[in-house]
Image 1 (tube, rainbow, N blue to C red):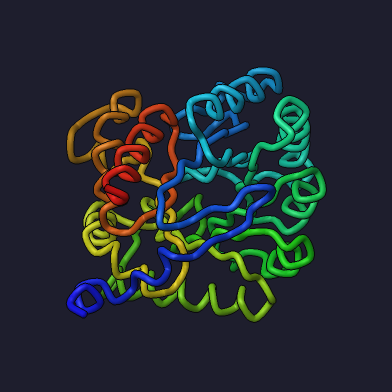
Image 2: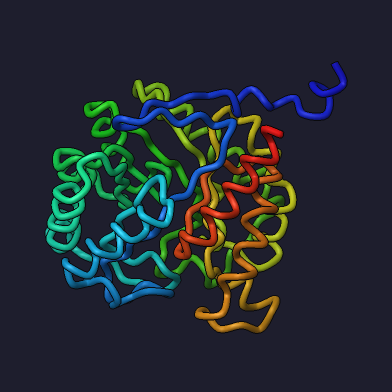
Length: 289
């Protein structure tokens, strides 16, 4: 059939994952709302370090249509410093507990590279581990995810957050990122992890031209065989192109989100959940009409 020639990797759209108490059909698009409990994240650092404010913001994002809340206790912006495991846990665990007390059915993700942080978060009710290193910083994290039968997001990063933007070089960024994600997803599968999501890692050890190449050829990542997540929200490449400060990047972010969905992304990780939920609703209507 001609449709198979045009789109040979459509099979991963038909994947269904049971995550928590909900089935996610990746024919459709979903929104992951960002909740940074950090003093130094590039966009919202310091806004939600108070537990009450963090919980209320999560509940607001759920009300606006977030399908997943991604909770991070350590900034991974370019130039950021690492923090201790105990400090990260002190930030995230009370917020996880607070959200689930108010919304027991909320689908929560932990944004961490630390195996023990992931383990404590999963013990407290989180059901997704979102690892920006794709499991490469602490490989023990694969065993943790398998122990809890959790979902795992594997992202590509070149280097570490502190130095990743100093001089990233690729001979072919799409091929290198693809090979990395294919390799890390194979490792995850070998560890018995069945629910895998991949993320090309826009802005993580990439220059402007690298980010644009990855977005332009995003559909190629579908042939890895897993649902595709992308985080474009307020990223510096948008500011570089349009000469906009962080606080004015939501509208162009949303334009890029729709482009990413048309190229195969199925989870949009974003700060502005209300806009992204509208975009996903429009996209989901288009593909079912």
